[in-house]
Image (tube, rainbow, N blue to C red; front, side, top):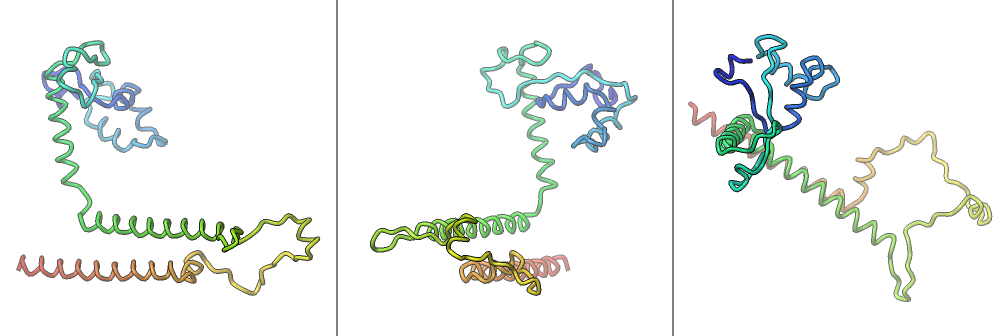
Length: 213
């Protein structure tokens, strides 16, 4: 890998997992069970030979100026101003590269809207569950939507266990939720937002095409 770093005899990283994985060797890093095996394959493919490994030194990240000459790196040397400046430059370059491949804003907005809708549904379910299990009557009596009974209590009360009709097809979760008026209204609102968003996306695409022409 010396052709990538002319005149250098080492590499410095602020991620100790990178240093550890690199020093464990190609066979370990690119094993099928490794989560980042594909990335390690690219790194090792850039090496001159499989054994062409430069020593990697770890340095602390996001340091303050006051830590120069105080914080230590993995080789025992103290942090220098050049180390800190180079680390800041690498972080800035990484953010620029990530921005170039970032998911489109429209997609991110769609995800955030979906998260907000799911949060609304979860909050409503939590509130209605609490109310259903702690409904207070005027006399102070607390009613629950259901009471657990043991098998012995059921037999004493003559309550038979309800059995599902095998001829009836069970409803899936979406069908059961659709039967609840509140949830049905929320789902309808989600569908309306999606239609409006799709229409806006199509109009935006048409404007882009007109601009190119």
